[in-house]
Image 1 (cartoon, rainbow, N blue to C red):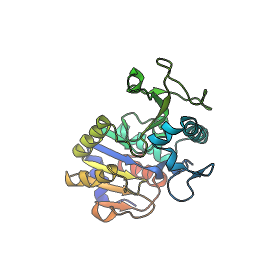
Image 2: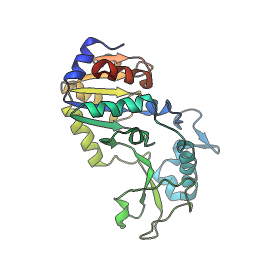
Image 3: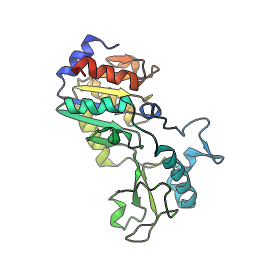
Image 4: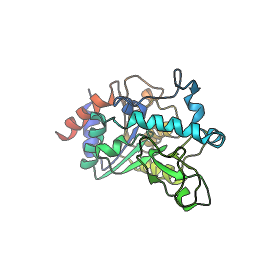
Length: 249
């Protein structure tokens, strides 16, 4: 499945970055709400994931995110998640950059995680004057109560700690991921069609900086021909085999 060149490059790597997208989570049963069919109570789900929607009707937005939490709560990491965690144990310098908000990588044992789009199990205050606005806190309530939840410090509305459409990524989070990408010897992009910026540019950035870039995705993407190697397989099947081939069990 993987070339000898890829295996050798991974074995020699001192710094590895793995970029994951929705495809990795989908193998655990995490639904996607983007594109056709992404409806919830006759609302286009992506229209609710905006600052404007929250300002207009925070109750409705929180009902939507409560529903998503209820779907996610029973789900478990899949072999792809565990293989990534196993890679981290074997690589001196390892960074996982994920576009997913479901927390499954952390449950699987990954530690050095950069969550580009936040985490659905964390909340922060929507009042910019409150100290909790910049210090997200874990909240694993299912169901969330009360709806909408309120800040215990200032009484303001809490919001999910996720990046909504129309919002910028946290500069510190983006900077960390870009630095790791530029320093990587080996870069894996798994389970993503690589169309959402800035994550879509990271594999090419790593390749330009001299890393071996391996893509793992069931279907070819617009990046496939520009990378060192592209394997058309699901991450849950391919990543364990990659770890086995490079490092044994």
